[in-house]
Image (cartoon, rainbow, N blue to C red; front, side, top):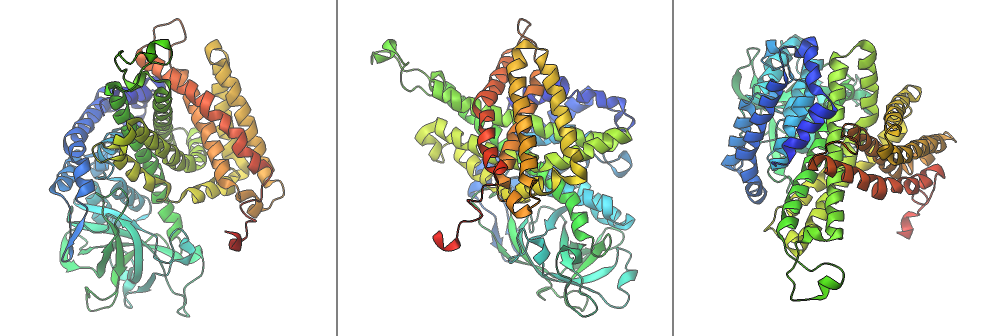
Length: 610
């Protein structure tokens, strides 16, 4: 983890110049010194409370003791340290107990916890839950639920999927009916009774906090008693595990939410993942049937509200994937520097009397380490760039804020999916560097791979992100977001062309940009969504590589030109970027070939032929 801090400092201050945000009114009380103090605190907590217990929470999975979920004591200690640091409310206003930190600094600080133990987790869902309520909840919902999540008393979840409706939210069957004739008079919001089942709920049951605040998607039946089909009928409700009064204090009543089971996972074992039954009658409450929930926003607008949390979670998952890729890289780099194996290629290496060399001296091991470095550090730069766009959206001029909004729309599927796929490959390479040892539990890299494998699935699978990118994001608002991104990529290309040592990369990036633009038009040429989206995943893979190549080239603009003073870290960045341009970017034309031709191979495969 010690290697992470210098990389973060470079990306934050040399590349993104985050310290200049202190010139904006919202951040005027901050300086680089306060940003560094936050990073120092989070690095220390991650090192002391998270990293030593990463293996423990993997081997001691959550278990049921009657109605309670039991977690290792280290998990609660980590949560208390995290909540005590103030990071749950880091970006919030001073008047609600926040620190008014730039989101970019908050995201960077979060990387320490994810590298140390993504399985223990931080406050991703709790903060996202609270932020959604701050954006769409009533004043009292903000005060009672969101502020108590920010201070660590309560934690939060998102309850979308159901056993029969994973990513297909239009098929949600959980029902919400008005709770009595006076249902609209409850001070916490219109009160409903919810009945249904929710699946894959991370942190859905535990004893880490006083209460758990569930945000639940459900449908309000029409006058005929039937549910409105599709997503138009989905509403959003805040459903606490324990009922709360308008003063924010627990009433002593348990809501009708029952734990139906724990999911036993490949990785992320330190985080509970649950099946929850709402309103099955196990905990009857206030003489009625169904779990009590309060409407958030307007009826039928639940999915629109929930996307506020989903998009935030997708960027958070991208950071988690990035951190796992970096954790594997650091572990395999350390191993490669110490492990003796084999001798040099050539005449000198044929003498068995000669001592073995460390495996880092072999070109193929360097290849695997460079791949991991290019994926992990490139993804980290992209995630911080996206975080910087969030700050621009919130504090920039109206024009800059709107551009940041559109750029985030286009980049969010990439920010979630690219690290999830490519840092998984990085973790596989980390195992390979360790050889047979990497496949054992004596070393941490097998756990990193298992933890990583979830990231291509949750918060929208790989295929869903690809369909979102090609089917919606690159064509929304007449393609303006894609045009804005192309403009920024071209600006980097132009700047790089003025530096002879970067001209080759700039020309390669220009060709890739042109090819992605042509493929986007070709995919939609017939106006047939079925044909266009049949190859959405290779399109996203090519698009993601374009974005990462651009990110690397933009980072290199900050590295001293040849002949000037370069640190070993600068040389490392130059080689990692060179690796990406020479070994990875050439994959783009192959991916786009099937997109441009609208290749029907996958779509036309007969089911019986499998």
